[in-house]
Image (spheres, rainbow, N blue to C red):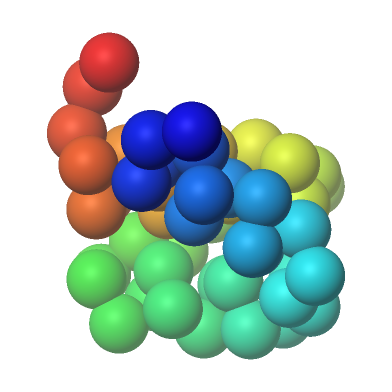
Length: 51
């Protein structure tokens, strides 16, 4: 498992509010209707870029 996959797996246990807070640190403020799964993928993209 690569580090991106590890991050995604670990973020499954983190609250949606905490993921949104981490995204806001990076200047990203997604709509409230965006699902946790999509938020996780956005955060993984922030850290590891496009795959």
